[in-house]
Image (cartoon, rainbow, N blue to C red; front, side, top):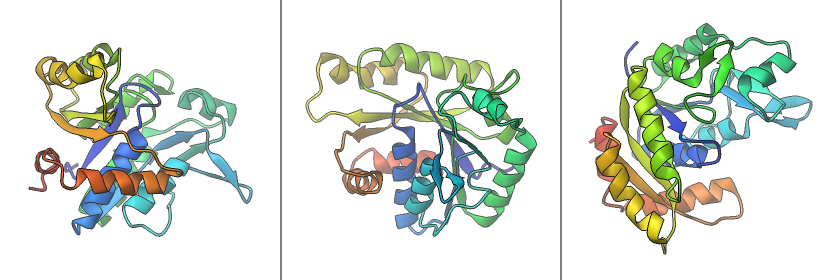
Length: 241
């Protein structure tokens, strides 16, 4: 399978990987790149007109310029906001990698580049003993790690990059998300330490942006990222410069 995409993972739940993935999709779309998106498994879906909807997949699709979310964009949808393996079990479903891989391959044929966003971090269980990390290996994609800037991020990020490499996953780089305009002492030294210790480059420091709703947040974030000095470096590492 050709590497026509990137798998976005996080060091933990709540680090903002959906917003980071959406911002990346929008930057590529604005550059004229036909970018596809995928959220293989969503637990904690919204209910709309009697059907489950992945809010994350909808945001990613909007950012990429798509008019709607297809089953290939979001193959597995679960109502309970818990670990995907347990959410699937509650609904009598087993998450099959072959179904996700088939959806990814169809998207890869339709788009120049596909952004795949995981659930939580590498060790989130999907089915039986299979983890998000196993799905990344099954899709044969490199990964981009989204992390936070505050206390604890050094440990979480190093554990994530170390585990990825131990499991044979290529780490393209790290994005530090929600970086404040006025960082405290920990936040001010975190990028330097991560860059020197993680054996993976810092490809982006995404600023903290406040907005009333996710689409506006992504728009404001992209406005700040496009002129940022690190953005061309990020795109180059993804094969676009």
